[in-house]
Amino acid sequence: MPTCAICGIPTEHKCTNCNQTFYCGKVHQKQHWLTHKVDCRPFKVEHSDQLGRYLVATRSIKPFEIILKEAPLLCTPSQVTSPVCLGCLNGIEPSDYIDCENCGWPLCGIECKGKPEHEAECEFTVKRGSKVSVKEFTNPHPLYQCMGTVRCLLLAKKDPEKWKVFSELESLEKLRRGSMQWKADLESIGKFIPRFFKTTDFSEDLIMKTVGILQINGHEVPVTDPPHVAIFKNASFLEHSCHPNLAKSFTKDGHLILWAPKAIKRNTHLSICYSDAVWGTQERQQHLMHTKIFKCECERCLDVTEFGTNYDGFKCTTPDCIGVILPSSLKEWNSKWRCSTCGNHVDISFIKDILEKAGKDLNPMTRTADNCIKYIQNYQKWLTNRHFYICQAKIQLVQLIGTDPKELMTVPEDKLNLKLEYCKELLDLYEKLAPCEIRMLGTFCFELHSAIAEHTRRVALKTSLSPKNMLEESLLYVDKCINYLQHECDIFVEGHILKQAKINRDALRMVLVM
Ligand SMILES: C[S@@+](CC[C@H](N)C(=O)[O-])C[C@H]1O[C@@H](n2cnc3c(N)ncnc32)[C@H](O)[C@@H]1O
Image (tube, rainbow, N blue to C red; front, side, top):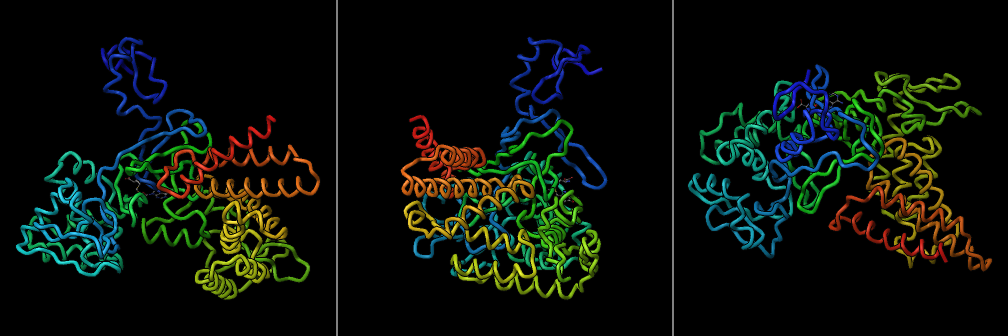
């Protein structure tokens, strides 16, 4: 039987927030709160052979509930980056920076000189006997490839408690060893650190394990320009799913907020998406294998129709057949594709050729509404209406039509209708496929709400009526936008959208009560 955290008496009463700590009564629960509040979270860490450690909900979680707010264990420059200030991790402005007078690393200004973040590596660089010299600021700089790892290694002396937490995270060293990436890292980091810093403090094995921990657990944090990488203790145990149940937001100072856009049942695995949920299955699978060394077998990847959306599907080439061509299973992605309606088999080289051309045509395309429309018309000959390449063009299109309220007022009727149609279609699709892509969903809701409001204005001008149901629909989407973007701070575009959405919501509410 569980026992009270204070007096050890057997008891069945537990903290209802985490469901994990037991108390004999209210008095001891209150007494324990200052200690307990640090760990009082609605999840626990579990382990399986397939996933390693993972998090499970210890109680049901309500929609929009924050399950974790966490400060980073440490922040580092990205492995591939142009020079950044080692004080604040923002990019170095070539016309406005200083060299650290002790070690020579460029800093963005005097205010970053004394920052504690730079202290350990400053001392470490001084010990090599000569200052570093960085003079090229526009391209990825080879010296910075090792700086994330150096920063982690120096934690051992600087903050042994944090180092202990860090060094117990997954490195997947055995799986990574020998791969192309591992060999490249060995040269640019494992062998480079002892040579460049003239040190024998760290063995090659320890350096390569540290590289692995950083790559497997690092989160890209977009609060600096360019984004930096941070390690978060608890969030490091989250498993991946291409159809996750948690959304990630960041505060201005780089703290992580994990929250649930939809309700989550007790005992459910908690997950985030390590990849880009807008990509097709093969791109996601390759990215996860390359960066995190595992084959994803989430419910979205195992269902080739991706919840009936046919997000990777081709139109059947048999005359009069309206079926969709897809691989028969995840295993057959590179071999057998056939129509689920007429059974027609299609050569894999045909699929690969079209996909290669569609990708090549989309990426360098000049971003205009007309180019997007032409792209969609052309590739809809082969790809389904909800194919990921078609949807990527539609995402660009809805943002290009009427980018601000003034421009929206002059958009031709056909383009406004297209914006309305595609916003609804994309919102419906991605709410099914990627329900935690909250920045994208919030943006669609905002675009949709403004397109509906503009459509209503035009109807009102023509008929001198202000249709209440249309305004209510606009309000519905602006409310949804606010829900999706509620944790976005104002250093991000989405934070600005949130601010505007709140103003528009209040205005719409006023109009509706008049
Ligand atoms: C950030 S760590 C997650 C915590 C890790 N399981 C541990 O024990 O520390 C990422 C690693 O966990 C494993 N992992 C996460 N999600 C997975 C999934 N859906 N399927 C298989 N392995 C997964 C992979 O090895 C991946 O590289």
